Length: 287
Image (cartoon, rainbow, N blue to C red):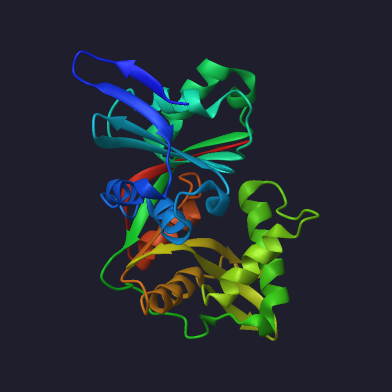
């Protein structure tokens, strides 16, 4: 199905994208590789075909130009370059909500949530939580604190302890457990370990600090899943641990990024102390 909207200048159409559109999509997303790293990583790995990606991707075209993309999976992720496009994309989403979150650039996320709620009502309007201000940060030339030498690549040897730490982080951060009967979260974390994307401090066989490369594309990576054992907190060791993570990430990715909730004042202070600076703002709507 294709939706058309006529303006005095040009027609805008929305349709489902496939691999034939991949070059156009990647060109659009590459204008902001740090902000669009999630989609760049996903599409770079799986392309745009639904049977590989696991969800639809809708594109909005103004004439021959791609001006908007919407990843319509468990994470609903909008990217638009022209006003008014979100309304066209929202019409394709429909009233039945399968997504567990809306995430992306803050202005687009809030606008899309508002439009979905206006158009489709309660299923989209009733969010569990809206995190409207999440600073997007990029590491400077070098960490400005000394790295903790105990930070190391986590291997399968310590996976069980690492997984326990990951579950604790997720539950603390999101407010719900990631565990379910499918064991999907365990498989996800195991895959990250296999990719050499997990870092931590292991003390007497127990993971006390953890962090992951959640997504990456070309020379950019995004750090996710930062967690420290509550017994180790408030002793000034987090900044040195993060500096260690940055050093390990930079062996493969020159640009190291992350985003954080604005209300997490200690984390914001720590990231700035390490040498991260804000370059944008993300938002997440949680269902």
